Length: 224
Image (cartoon, helix red, strand yellow):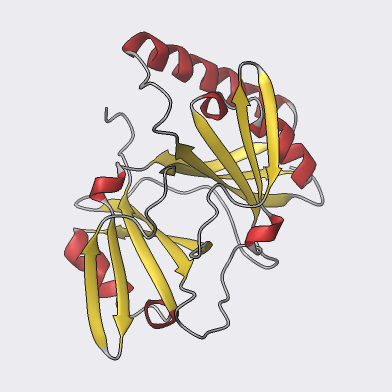
């Protein structure tokens, strides 16, 4: 790789206003994704790891308030666009990341938010989950109702860039994909036997008291 590699979280979102992709369009998108990945490698950039998430109705949100564990179904915020996948990209700069995300096939089907990982955050390639384990994405989110100074492994939402492609026009906007009170401040990946184990671990996370944790199962490689 290069001497000054930077790491960025890409948050792939789904836009419900767009018609669902047909099977043929899905196949074309997968072929286009392969071309995109080959282009990254040729340019000296890399997708370290990533996955689609299961749909928002499979999300679980975890909070601890006044010492009480609160577990609810659904995502952390009721927004039009919802998280549909994630990736961690290594490249030279935010401008480079934005340029590559404008070529990502998902930018035509939703949006791609690009957020720098904070300094000192380690990123690398991941092995598949071990036997009997499934992988879960844990989104660490702020809660404006709680007076706290939130720290996470992502730079603040103001550092985000959101990329969409509509009618062959690339639209890049400053800030996160959704203008909500709650915002994603970090993320973790957990390999656990089931959701109960995830909830047990998440309940010990310090941000369960100071923010909101959204747990989303990831699709296994090769699953439809």
